[in-house]
Image (cartoon, rainbow, N blue to C red; front, side, top):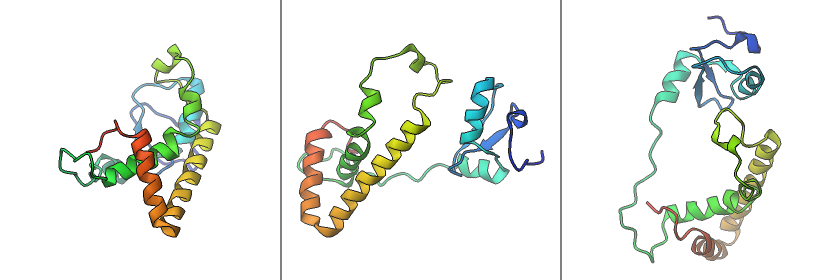
Length: 163
């Protein structure tokens, strides 16, 4: 199938594979998308996936180094640090606003979007700013970073998975 320079909703075909904008993930169309969701799909997946894209997406992701279980409760691991950074950047940021609302039956239908483009943009910008702040602190004052990240982990991530 020739690759159009700019896909339109008419170009979408059931059974075809499309490369997501991130260049990593491939999405397949198993059934005809609804008219309104075609534009949303094309925004996320603007090009047809090549066989190389499909093969690359099918590869198993590299696993994170395994931490021997059980992790002693007094040991602070890389996973504990990652959990604290995740809580700081995402969980305790803008994401709490939409998460705190009432449940909607629409959320049970995967064909509906759960977050707007503006909300996603705001979430990513805020998370990036928060991570940049923490990484700068880690470079400029490692002792303060260590104190801060351990406290954050203790306050917000004690029950999170550690292995």
